Image 1 (cartoon, rainbow over the protein chains, first blue to last red):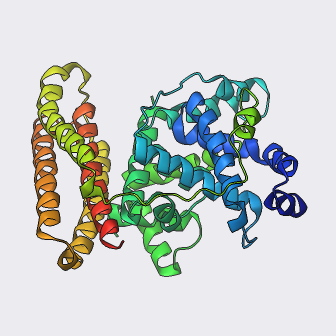
Image 2: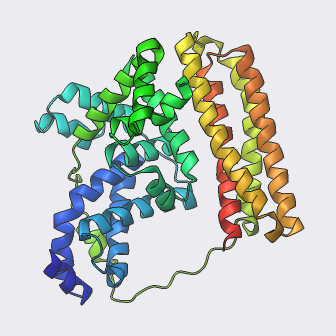
Image 3: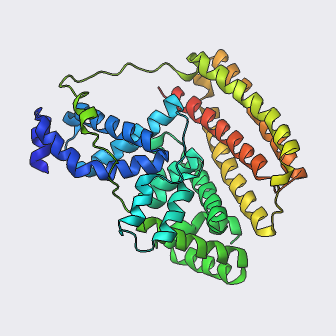
Length: 171
Length: 211
């Protein structure tokens, strides 16, 4: 991957395409969970890779390329939500999420679909913090930096998200 | 250890990051508090489920063409955004939204009685802990902004204080509605939205002062 990154930094679009192929599923999953909107996830995934192409020269290898790209994706999605206030269209039966059951990738499909649907039904702010903290493993101080939220706000949103999830999953 | 203190430490406990003495206090509290035991079990299960979610999902269509047509070798230079108080339309929209929120609280209270469910004591505790978390966040930002007050113009301070008064009024009205009907989830959601507006306003004001 290091060679691909170096080539892409020198303007090799084919190398960048290879990086896209390696990373797109990871980025799309993040965008889909953060937005709960398949169309928005498509657009934002494209935005992430366009932004990555523009900022490739700033990648110095302090972290791995997937880690750098993931943080960039979080930044793109949260910035987009802040600046445009895109109206969210929630998906409760999104084909991508439904496919998780059909593909057999789930160890406990019923339970996981329940959780995916419940996450999608969370209010945007609470959903973003839950996805970043409990699914993606970011800490509150990192979420604060990435999202522009205060660390205390991140904690409050996570608390609220878990409370709402409990209500939904206990039904 | 109180229920709120336990709640604040639970993540670090699950991650094995809590100092031994605090972990022992937490475990002692769990032995004596059914509410926190239930919360502990729920969060442990939720963490396990969340960690088991797939990290990769293929998009339904190939997105590359849309990327390829947009990427160029030209490095773009982004223009600086104006400070938030210069974005008048945003402020006006926020003020209108908050006024609608305040009056909407009453409307929701009056029209959604059928959606009201009775909260049990555990739910009330959970609600109060959520509100406490929001208050802490708002208080921290208020203190931060107060420290930076000398760097704001009187016009900026006036705009901030005007918007905060609107938000605080929305919070008070929503709290009053909830006091009369504590199980109304629609009103509770309005309360969280009000707190988030306040935190967002304080956050943007505090961060713009740093620019």
